[in-house]
Length: 181
Image (cartoon, rainbow, N blue to C red):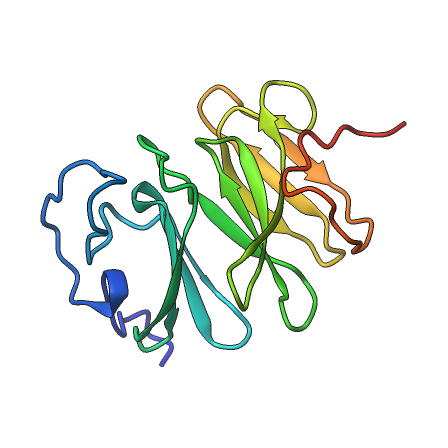
């Protein structure tokens, strides 16, 4: 169908969506069964899954295209305010092996295994220098595997991280990836 008509909608865990006010996120309370606010991203993968950024609940939820819940991953669950899950992009290999997740509140980009949702490494930090952010808001990849980030609030800039290949990672946190001359 190419009419632009809505085919289906769903809320957290595939439930019927609700516009109820659940109050502010509390990391010590049980997870609510709905999205707290409108979702911040919904990215379909090549294998037919939909990855949803539930920003204020600090989680990614994965669904089938029919809205059936598959799994979720909590990211930095002590993050309050703006939340930790702002946007995602997939690696450009055929299997989309990796997810790159922009966490604007904690000023990181997480590199995750798409199948397990395990965080493999992260890079970046808060600041105004290259490789740092003031609220990394959006993330995208190009056909060569380069990563692009865009900032919001006072950041107001775009950064490009050049793909150099895949190698073993010694530390979970890579810190600021400074440009080399």
